[in-house]
View 1: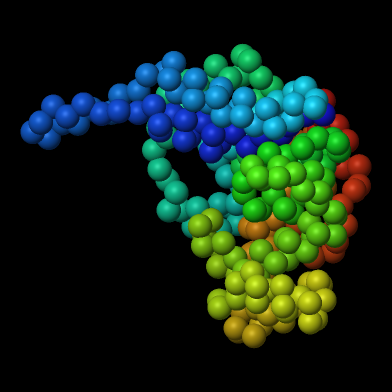
View 2 (view 1 turned 180 degrees about the vertical axis):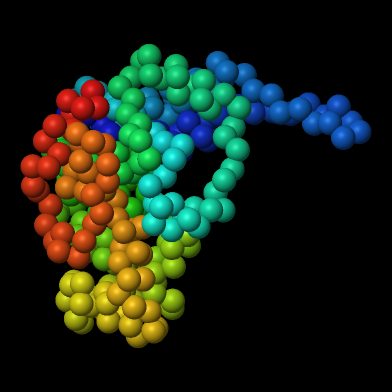
Amino acid sequence: MKLLIDADYIVYKSCAGAEDEIDFGEDVILVISKFSEALSNVQRELSKIKNNFMWDTPELVLFFSDSKNFRKKICPDYKGHRNRKKPCGYRRVISTLKQQYEVIILPELEADDAMGIYATANPGNIIVSPDKDMRQIPGKLYNMDEVMTITPEQGMQWHLIQTLAGDQTDGYSGVPGIGVKRAVSLFDEDGYTWDTVVKAFASKDLDEEVALTNARLARILTHENYDATTRTVIPWCPTDASIGSDNGAEFQAKTA
């Protein structure tokens, strides 16, 4: 069993926590960091996670987002407000972690997508992430509070819910005025189908193309949505109603 860890946020907060500043007065403030402290912060966070699985000795696989993001080709404004500078030591810490753990970064993919692809190509592992988006991926998910099991049907449903509800943090709006609770209510009434999605967007005078754009932005990739040979994304389509083909069978070999 492996723990598939969303390491982006762990390294970010660990490095940010190790930062300090020196105020030289006038117009100069220097940001400094102690690398050993940043790395120690990361190791402590990883140990906390691992200690929750003491009945086994899990191997840790760390996932990071690439500097480029394929979703910006779908919507240039995707996460446009998140162009924050990485904290001191961020890249150096990742380079050091590569010497100690298996680290996976896939071209133009976010860590969420790389985890989704790996988890569906290699069942039996546990995704570790506090991000609600990972409820789209069938299998076991540790959300930093509890381990839950996501069925393929539940994963598909959560993707459609997020398509309607949108995510302002990530920069896609979904259907204006519809949040998660309202989305669930609509699907309970009309069924978890693409027709229900299209009808909800149409109620706000938004066409199916807008619905599809939101669905593709919301979708966390599985191995079905990824060509492991060319390392390219296969765009999600409304006919992708099930999870479990063999398209990503070679993922482990390609990324190990």
